[in-house]
Image (cartoon, rainbow, N blue to C red):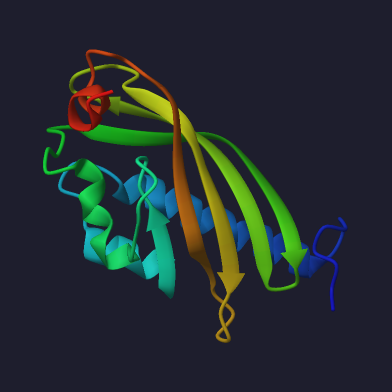
Length: 148
């Protein structure tokens, strides 16, 4: 077993790069009229997508995140990512984000708390994603969609 938390190995560099690629791809895809069926491919087939209200859905149902009130414009931005490997095939990540919408320059912010798992084919995919919203603009899209 390779200790992926120990710096200096090519395996660690590849794993970090692959995980960050998935995080960035999700960010690019998480926009208005998001291609949720394509986004589901970033997750393990038996993965779980936890909505901000705490309920979990299969990744193919992640479109429920918009609560039936999709924003006319939304862009997600990652600011910092921490990756901690729990084994040579699993990692816990925390990725700080903020979202801009047509309603608010900074609509809501928080972090994605993920468990990544490497598949037998060598792909790093999201096994569990928990969306933690730490704050919001009370006049923004998120506040209207979630009533908070």
